[in-house]
Amino acid sequence: MAAYGLYSHIQSNKRRSIALLIGLFGLVYLLVYAGALAGEAMSYNASLQYLARKAWQDLIAAAPIATIGTVAWIVIAYYFHQSMIDALTGGREVSRTDEPRLYNLLENLCISRGITTPKLKVMESDALNAFATGMNEKQYAITVTTALIAGLDDAELEAVLGHELTHIRNGDVRMLVVALIIAGAIAFFAEMFFRMWFYSGFRARRSSDSDRGRGGNFIAIVIAVALVAVAWLLSSVIRFALSRSREFLADAGSVELTKNPDAMILALRKIEGRGELSGATSAVMEMCVDNPREEFTDLFSTHPPIEARIKALVEVMGGHDPGPLALPAPQEEMQPDALPGPAGPWGGAADQSPQRGAPSGGTPIGPWGSAPAEPAGQRPFLPDRPPIDLGGPAPTPSDDRPAGPWGKPGR
Image 1 (cartoon, rainbow, N blue to C red):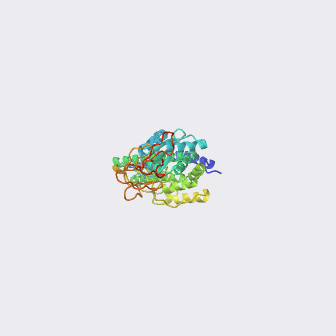
Image 2 (cartoon, one colour):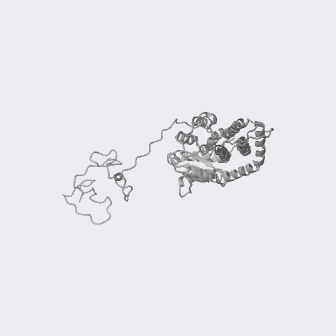
Image 3 (cartoon, rainbow, N blue to C red):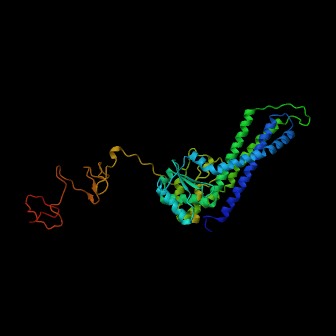
């Protein structure tokens, strides 16, 4: 079965996306309960059982507001996530007129497989990377860095675009955006909890009710903080739902599109270690072709190592690995006196400075070797007469005239 558009992988991504959204509501409710428990503990000097019961009642009362807030967060992120990402990365939409080379490569790939052409965006960056975003066909977009455009040839750039198109077709992009929404929501509610805690302070009040007891405040606060930590940890564990196999499938899908495994391998070699997007969040980096940010352990890594991906392309797709590549250093800026002048009627302007390999006298070397040195003050060489007689009277030669290239002119 072709790697591009695997039905089982697409269906799995759809199920995971729905499960992640359902899990988001569960995490939000967990945070609301933790906040209610901390709030009750800071308001009453009571037993842990009493505080837990009151926090549960608060959760039931606040559940409608939490649900509406979560739905609103999802709706806002659904329609405006691209604007948020563009604000972080500085991406701008381009047309065929702006980037004809890039646009034509993307359009040709889409036409070859009958795919709706996504929007094309370019961001100014020295990093070599690209990523895709969107939740549906009207929103799908591929963002490419300027360094990637300049550093890759057409075949390699086409391979990267095919990689991102495969992510779109396989539903990886939609699931990544859902994970981004969840991470943002959990971070928002967790920050709100800690702000409420630190700014409110501990204001436990004594109570004469015998059923409340006392002494459970500190334990309740510890439990609330632990619940917030668990919610944050679960939002991080969501990365496990982002199966790292998606990158292998996207690489294989690119080869299915371009029929060129070597181009994908060379693109990965050039991107390797050069994809860090300054100012981009970890959630954005998880969308990229390569995520060079190393975790404290490979356990939370969202991308397999470049070496493993290349090895798979070599073994499965028959590609050839040239090994790690050292990109050429950027060319030095030309000095003003070395800038070429206006072109002449037969091509580029003559070089004002001695050419590479020219003789010490400064005479440039022509295509068939060095030009003969001309005596000082002598006019440029011209034939004594044209090679073709146009029918006019032949001029009377004189013996003192210089010989032409074919000997002394005859009478």
